[in-house]
Image 1 (cartoon, helix red, strand yellow):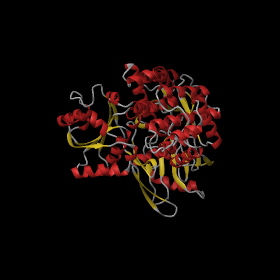
Image 2: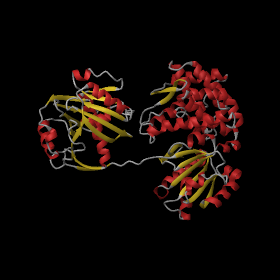
Image 3: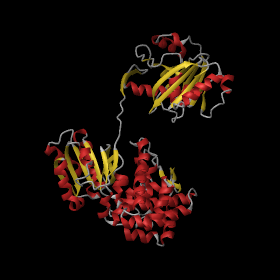
Image 4: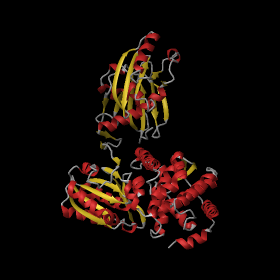
Length: 592
């Protein structure tokens, strides 16, 4: 249910229905009464404001919109914006349009039976939008209807929605995929239908009760990008993926220095053969250089080269390189093409997947940035063969994160094959390695897609990312990101065990897996005050909600909204018990 600023008045004006309901700003019905209205189907839209004014009478609360829900015989798409006579718009919404909003989301093709008007509707949706609507007289003979309905089921119209029809409705028990749409459901659904209609209108004008006119523009931008796993080395002259994605556009390369030392000649040869490469910038990647200063440096280089609006920035390296280059691409010329080629495991499964481009600022991790989707991501796991073991372990921390909180079978693969995957740098067992990389990437994308711009701060993928930013900062980035995530996951899981919402066996399994993959498995190298401060910091960044992600079992998790000093101390002691060391020793030995 959408949250609207004022009350909404919804009039059920269908045949035999005469109910006027007022909904409050939380979408709950506040008052209702029976109201008599003429046959709305026979009226022109310009008569609706007069009827709305008469029905409202002396209603005291401000009205955001007045909605008439009419029978399916009314022509669809009729709406009037009444800024000249009323300080709110008036909408006429057919109940068949409302039905498309309130049936289950998986009902892409459904039949709707209107017993009051003896109408049989066939409705097809695509991405929650009405694609086609067709109607026919509803057969009075049940056998004839069942035969025709069976034919429609062959074309996917198997689900059936029914507008209330008394005894006739209750007799329809011939399909489990049937749903009765009551009047209360339709009235609530009308608000959703109008909200979608407003979005589709793009621009509209409204007038508030103080006489102010507001012009509102609503626009959406489709986001689509690919993560391509290449089988040949990405800089091989026989691999066209990079050239195809660049599509002859002017290109500026931003390459991690170590990657350039290892693969520079192959990249240069590929660029000469297939790319319109204007420059190659070698970047010294380190968290201390993940700053706005470096973003500005890349923008200056692009400006000096005269890179046009249709150019593309290609980032080749780990998470730091991808973030700095990505933010530069988002800012230069208000956004140019951006292609990622991650060369670390953490880049392949995490940093290269999402749309966030952010850098550190004012001793805060990723405080300054933008949501800017890449054009595409090219994943080449052959880069992992030259990756230092410590960086490989950091990538496995992100795979453990998504597995423990989201996928029991993936966690099982890590438990069974983790040692071999780590030793071979994700080259053996071949099939298992491909499955682990593809599955972890897909899980991350599935979690990101519904909340790509983080309008909802309850993100299950934030597991391991509440204490970890502070652990990195207070160590002056001597603790790498993946190492901090490992420490965070273990502490968060221990808190869940202490709460009694997660079994001790889950913590034991996580602790064992961290050791196998050469990740920190001891207590966090921070004081209790520092850990509490870490939670206060993320709470500010999450809109005032802590949303600490903790597992409840392998493959699922939940959110905590408060953690006490006592819980943190007990959790640290529990981890010390597992690792055989004291919290004070860990803090003295590790924090710098």
